[in-house]
Image (cartoon, rainbow, N blue to C red; front, top):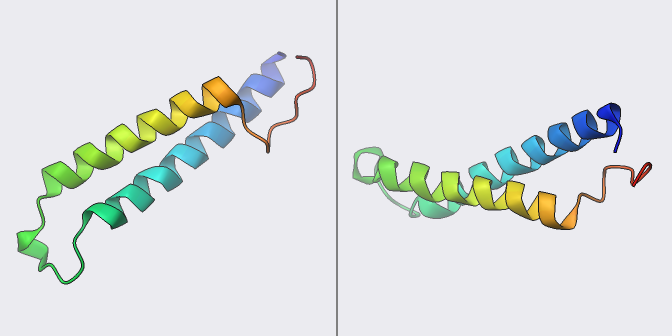
Amino acid sequence: MTKTNWKEFLMAAAIRALRTFVQAAIGAIAVGSAFEDVNWLRVLSVSGVSAVLSILTSIATGLPEVKKAGL
């Protein structure tokens, strides 16, 4: 894989992980909870683990938005 492909892969994987982080945070915050009732440490923990799993999945299976040239 060329240096350009690695940069493209890392950017796409980071965007995907950030989206996964936000989606997990939304899911971890209970509907109807008051701001002070949310366990923010748990929300960050669950979201962080989800982002790490997203990165690992991207490495294991690849990303369809990244060209496979040079592999």
